[in-house]
Image (cartoon, rainbow, N blue to C red; front, side, top):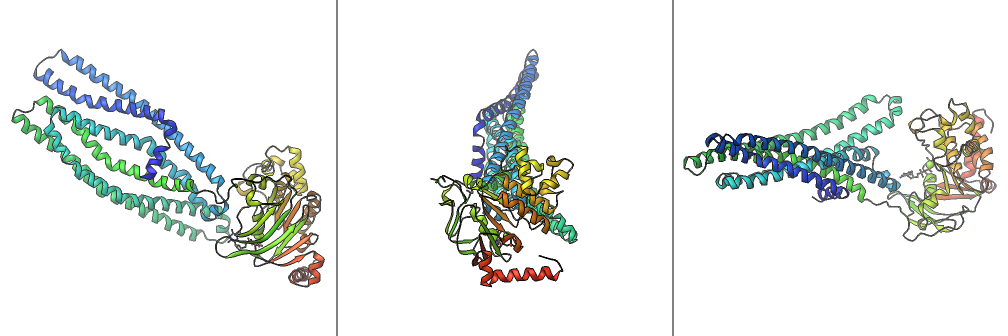
Amino acid sequence: MNSTRRILGLLKPYRGKVLLGFLFQTVVIVTRLIQPLITRQVVNDVIIAGRHQLLVQLCLTLLGLSLTRAVSSYVRVQMMERASQNVAYDLRTGLFRHLQTMSFSFYDRNRVGEIMSRMTGDLEGVRDYLAGGIITMFEQGITFFGALVFMFTLSWQATLTILAMLPLIAWIAFRFRSRIRPAFREAREQTATLNTRVQENLAGIHVVKAFVREQYERELFEQENRKLLGVNLKITDIWRTYVPIMHGLSEICTPLVLATGSVLIATGHMDIGTLVGVTGYIWMLTQPMRMLSQIINSMTRASTSAEKIFYYLDLGPSIRDDDNPQTVNERKGRVEFDRVTFSYDQQPVLQDISFVAEPGQTIAIMGATGAGKTSLVRLLSRSYDVISGRVLVDGVDVRRQRLKELRCGIGYVPQETFLFSESLFENIRFGRPDASLDAVVAAARAAQAEEFIEEMPLKYETVVGERGVGLSGGQKQRTAIARALLIDPSILVLDDATSAVDMQTEYLIQQHLERSIQGRTTFIIAHRMSSVKNADLILVLNQGRIAERGSHQELMALKGEYWQMWQDQLTSISGEGGGV
Ligand code: TTP
Ligand code: MG
């Protein structure tokens, strides 16, 4: 009920249109209600009493009523469609805007397919209800009660026979609604699950094909699809049980009224014209009864769809600006971790991390896979909040800073490159949409991306596919480095940013980066020892703790984990017969 009320609330900005819609709908109904009165006059005055001169006038009135009805219907549909399309637009925009504010943890928990399902199917369900459902409800309701009143003035006895049926119909409608509601909910959930399967399969289609798992994927899909079929059939079953009952009850009305009317005529309490008029109202009374199941259906479908949309809208971002944010006067890139502990859920990922990176320094973070390197740098841009301790950027706790200001100062090259299906030019200037071609070229040069871009047929205008299809892994990474450099950040984070390039290119990138990272605090996460050797501070993470820290020389002298890694790489390289 609550979500139905909220759906109606969405119409508020369009109340003018909606009111006009309802007004014209009322006109349609009134013209229908008047019609039997005229038929009654035709029978009594023209046919029985023989006043034939009235016929033309009555027929013209009927014609006038039909015309008015047609025009009003047109306006009504127009108004309601516009209002509903506008509401759908608002809801889509609102939902998308809201999704942009949500934090990473929301996306960790909610799957893309499911969100897409809310944005499309569920939204259309709500719109459909606004455009048609509500007006049908209004139309049938007014018609029913209007017909009751008109019929009552013609014959209260005939009306009472119909009123006697009402409690029974109401009870059945209530039963129908309470049974179909959970089924609709289940159907919405299952649709979301199915969409997620499709989305994941498509996103990972290369893996599916590489491992020849098409058959398995097909079976998984069919399994979910069968479940959806099951739920939909369940809805049909409920529908199949209740619709004939409701239709049956409405069918009974006709013989009941006819029988009552006949008795009344026989006893001299009613004339024939009135009986004809009364039968004209029977349809108006029974139609809403027949439609009731459909109305309940549409209303329930919309409210279960809306539940999920509103659920998303009601979730606030877990990470948002401080109510009273502190401004950083000068962004120099000083970073301090002060006894930081962090976890995604229960399992601790980082424990007791403390270090300082002075402006312009290069910090290398090393450690086995899963040690927490990516997690550590994610805390810098406040992608997640720490459990305890503080992360300070330029002396201010990141939680006290405006997210926008904080993030604008950090150039981030993620471990997994993501590019948009746009031109390389637009991809590189993603963080600074007003950057000139010269600036883009300079960034590309610094990231060693210029050469391969120049070789492309359309150069910077080359459009890459979804997720960067059409580029090699290393080309994508270099584009991402250019993108990060272009925003001229005070802090640069390179999370395994050269993992996909060959040693020669990595060396070249480093040479160039040396110049580009001048004056920026740079965090380098790398597995190749040569990339980290010149760092001012090397942190070796081991299961979320800093196991060793210091410069290359210091750590080599320590002969600990770092030294061991160095030895291992030397051995593997010389073992392969290559040089360092
Ligand atoms: P990471 O911080 O991703 O580890 P890493 O960057 O050091 O590893 P790699 O060299 O392979 O890139 O993960 C640390 C732990 O946190 C690991 O146990 C997985 C867990 N984790 C989550 O639970 N949720 C997440 O979103 C991520 C990224 C990691
Ligand atoms: Mg990582």
